[in-house]
Amino acid sequence: MTSGTVHNLPRISWRQKYQLRWKRRRLLWRSLRSRHQLTCLKDQTGEIRAGGVLCFTTLRNEITRLPWFFHHYRQLGVGHFLFVDNGSDDGSAEYLLDQPDVSVWQTYSSYRGSRFGLDWLTWLQMRYGHNHWCLMVDADELLVYSQCDTHPLQDLTHWLDQQGRVGFGALMLDLYPKGPLGHESYDPNTDPTELLCWFDAGPHRAERQSPMGNLWVQGGARERMFFAQTRQRSPTLNKIPLMRWSRRYAYVNSCHSALPRHLNATYDGPDGSAPSGVLLHTKFLPEIVEKSKSEKQRHQHFHDPNQFGAYYDGIINKPDMWTPQSVRYAGWTQLQQMGLMTGGDWVFS
Image (cartoon, rainbow, N blue to C red; front, side):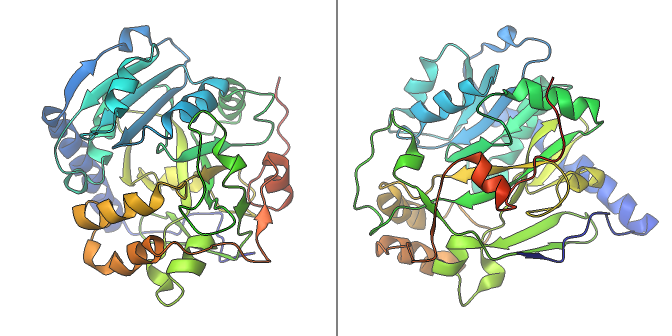
């Protein structure tokens, strides 16, 4: 299923190490400066407890996903949520302000200009996440891992601490409905995987990139549907969403890669040996068609938005992503058996 998986980071020169060290410092510095773009709407960070798992998210207009997002991550044991609202006008900010375990900042600054929100979240991680296990996920991502239905994140992070691991990687798995996109209706208080219940089992390609040693996984449903002729532009599917954070760390590209570079060794892809999970990607809820029309005009996603007009057009045309090879989602056990995530030999205690 996966080719080119490498378990050890490639060697690099002292010059490259020096350059990466300064790259990390520049990223931390620009994140520090970005704090001036944020206005705190609600500060509940005094409620953060030692040992609690923190969740960091930036969003714009995600009112449809928020009810189940909170249900899912509270069930997993997240202790506190830190959100940056990027100018929502659909009630998302007001919804967040009503939640008891949430701190909220707001900005109307450019999402793309902030490294797609990464500068803002890195500042919050520097300020509040140091020495905590921190989860960085988008509002349309639901993390699952081995035994997640019976063991909360605290059990997982305790095991990771015992093993001396500082990160936990995941494959982003696109879920989609059967039938044309935008055709069905969705109740925000229900599990989105009941509607988005299909996925592509593969193929996936994985390779290590130099000099950072970050994994690059591509493939899956979005590549099949929207990037068949330009596979090199298809979405990156690997993430390291869970990290025991240090204020010296910096994500480089979303949470696909991080510095210092040894953090990138925590995930070796689907079929790899490192413990890992799956981020269920609920992008293709019925609202995706209207959202794609808006995002195509806003030009806030992708480094070169003009190259991705065909991607948005493909979604706007309401295709049916289902094929006879599509697999129906049946839970974490199925994903582990298929090699899309690894439970390893851990024993929770």
